[in-house]
Length: 341
Figure 1 (cartoon, rainbow, N blue to C red):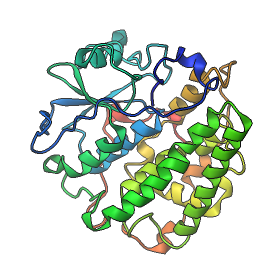
Figure 2: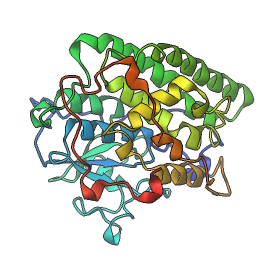
Figure 3: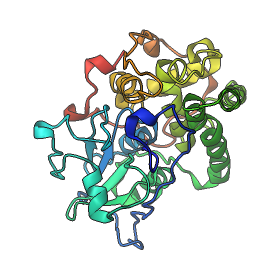
Figure 4: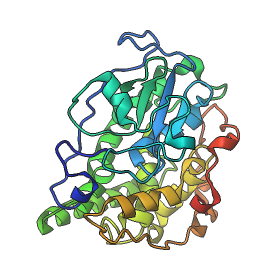
């Protein structure tokens, strides 16, 4: 999630046409180091906001694959200022590993006057303090396929080779109509623009519900990258997209199939234990002042439903395939009570 090039900071949200910025830094961290960045335990730091759905993909992948020891984690404050993501959750307002106050400092060390905004997820090279990549589309695919030497024992295959064409097809539709569609609706500045985007969101959700009524996961019988990418939008839907982004034809909790599906994933180790509803709500309602100038954060929705049995196991499926669930969340990465059901 980032600011677009040439905007007026947070106040511009909702006051100009929405355009998703492309990642400017697309170097890849690979097993063979072909871009100059070899996979290496302890060398890199993953910077995220728990509010951001694009960053949340990497949080889920990192947990499922057991990369916590290999790839350290920095969590930014969900409330940005006009310099974007900042480390005010940490002592003295600095990331304890990188020693910086703003993620922008790692961007500047890589390239001065770069085009585009400061976005998460981002991976920073710890020795140099330079940004390596902010390519949110490729980053998690590389965690699944290039970091395999550092995966935990029993890590699932999130991008199985035999299903990649189908996964890619599903992810493309989910990205266009759901992941990005809610933003096009929420930041629309014209009625027709909003209506087209909102209609596209719900048209795709209904198609996905039809698919998921007969199978537990989107592709095959195990969790894949496609499920991660849909989950990170669905888990935010009733809390922020339904009201704040006006995607309000119906709530997710009113759709039997999708509500069961997203609760199934939320209750699966590696998914819900990365979600902070407090960060999510405060970010959207307090940062997007062009949409919500009062910055008032709503009390709802009631989160208790996330823990209600989903019964999706009746459809079969093997969440982790031939692997095993991830272990307990490390204490320093646990979600505070304010952000959980």
